[in-house]
Amino acid sequence: MTNNLSRWTVLVLAGQRPGPDPMASHFGMDWKALVPVSGEPMVTRVVRTLASVPQIDRIIVLTQAPDALRPAVSDGGSAEIMRSGRGISTSILDVMDRAYVHWPVLVTTADHPLLTRDMVEAFLAEATGDVAVAMVERQRLEAAYPANKRTWLRFADGDRTLIFAEGAFKIGSQVIEATKSALSPFTNSVSLDVGTSSQSLGLSGAGGAIRFEDDAGRDSFVVLTNFSFGDLIAVRGATESQYSFSSRDLDGDGVADDLAISYSDPVSGAVNDIEILNILSPTAFVQDRASAIAAVGFNFISFG
Image (cartoon, rainbow, N blue to C red; front, side, top):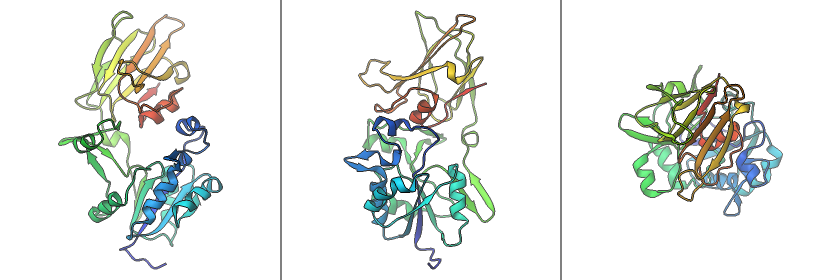
């Protein structure tokens, strides 16, 4: 294949973290990429959309389970399947280092079933420079999809969400990898050790990336609103296995899109009751920290 820079190579990330994926488990699947949308696996819909774009010359699907995904990928169109590595960055870099993969390269994901040809062509037309990342303004997305739940990045001129997102890019010998700390340094620290069992205290994540500090040995009865990417709950005095996580309807709006976090200290008797409102998709399945992070969309809580 010639190195024709007017034709794109696309990498479709179809792997998943170790252990059961909450969404896949909810639908009785082993792999999230095979979860059906309108009766069709997500990865099939993504591959079909990409195959319809004239500017795309080659589609490569990266997954830990090539045999399991092969029929669904084939149903979408002409695409190759390669076994992915242990992580997103290493998998992408491994493929990029192979001489027969030519630039430019688009990276997207298999769990993007609403991707359309118009979206892809618009991005390819506007992508300039060494690295381009597609985003959409919050006002524009919410006008089109009012009930959409997204993770938002704060910028000086407004909030945006990533469309084509994660991973690493290699430019020559330089690796550029996005990290949460680089995107959103904390602008403020707030204690969660407030409120009482009879009166929870409302706290807001608006106004910057906030570090909410939780001492597990002290009472915490709080309700968090406007919690988004860059905010973090930092717990000390307990481990993640001691904390409980679940999705609930905590604000009484009839939608289970709120996250409940709880813990009772066996020594001090302190109770930690942390509620984060409107942070989940209504279909999210949360049973532990890992599934909570997957449902929220970023690592929002640390223990140490």
